[in-house]
Picture 1 (cartoon, rainbow, N blue to C red):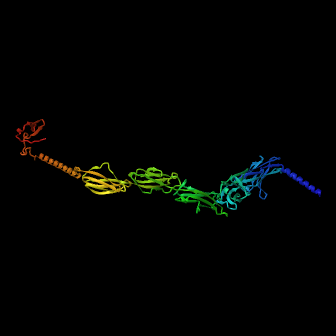
Picture 2: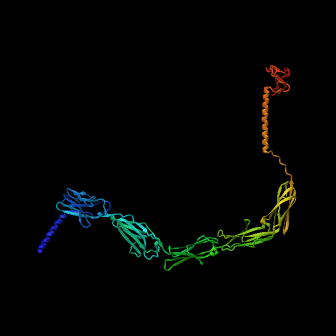
Length: 618
């Protein structure tokens, strides 16, 4: 029995040795793995050598199915080359190279995810020697650019559980990409306290992977300034690549730990009548915080208070309180500010208005206004400065002293802060008529002249006009205040006039005389009316036309012989006269002698013609 078992073992060893010797006759070398991007071309090289030479070799390509079986895809020998039909690679594979070179290359075009398999190159010789090699094909797909979305709502620090911060997502990668969360360049992971990372993987219909990751943390106040982002790593042929999303921050609601209240308007010192704007703000931003401003017994549930037309009663301390209504303890914090309203009371003038002072006496007056700041006082009369300081001293009073004095009190530190008071001063004394430069005048008869009597005095004097040789038409009395009274009279001049103005009051009288000399008015020359001139011109033109017509008629009659000679007594006949009977009288400036010429130019005397001639006078 033992002998038989030993024999069987020896036979098996001999068969195994023979088989190994046959395989050892061909040596095949291939890469362990080839890596390509999906959609590109993969080249898997098979290099071989044989102790029997390369003639008559058979080359076959296989791939290993998911179940571990071999599926041939290509066959080649000395007479034929053939791609297997009815397999996924039929239209997409080819083999380059020759047996003679000792290398053949399997080329797979348009590589897909399902092409990620193990490929076998089997080489046989004619002596039954054989050898094979294997290469794993790895297919990669670069994912899309990753995206990040932050949680739109604000997050309160009072929330007990971790709150969602945002979501990162990367789509269509292969193999599965990886996502890592960062806060301010520091990676976050689920192992940290208060950090929750929830990943989810989706396989698309294309076989690619989409990876999503949600981050939740326990939010604290300091997170309000933090930046969160995701880092995505993915595989590519020959290594690993990385890309990052944009940065996001979150809205964190946290309660105030301190509040500040201040006067926002006006800037600088405050005066009565101003409008004050008070503002209060805390260093938190929790919507559940309630701000309240209080002053004494008055409170406003607002972060802003507007006080109009303030007085000194608005001075004091204003408190601002912030209370969180979500907390069980109702934590309360407060701040305060002091407001002071500066004031300037109405001016008080002493003595009381009005005041009467006698001529030549002295008047002293004061003007004071109570203020919270230093004041400055100036006295004015008729808009002109007359004194500075709160005291006014008027010496040796005259009628020119009378009038209204205004004291203006200002606060130099605050523009527009001022008050004023007035004092009416009347100077007591007898009437005083202000006389014109000349009391003599000359006016024409029948004219009406205006006479003015300007009187000063206090009490206000009474005035009246008296005239001699004239008639007072009417009078007008006009009060001029501290300048006195003006009495105006209108008088018709009918002769020389003496006008007298009298003024009187309880302290005396005054008078003024005006002398008016009447003169005869010159008789103005008569003026020719434009209408009369036009008529005269028309008459002259008509006369000239008539004379011209008359001259024409006379000339016509003369030509016809109807007019007698110069004597006017001798008739002219129609008988033919001899040439000796027609003469012309010619006169010369150099002689008194008249020369008669015949028609034939003969020189004749008038006696030679028997007194018959026609006188033509130039």
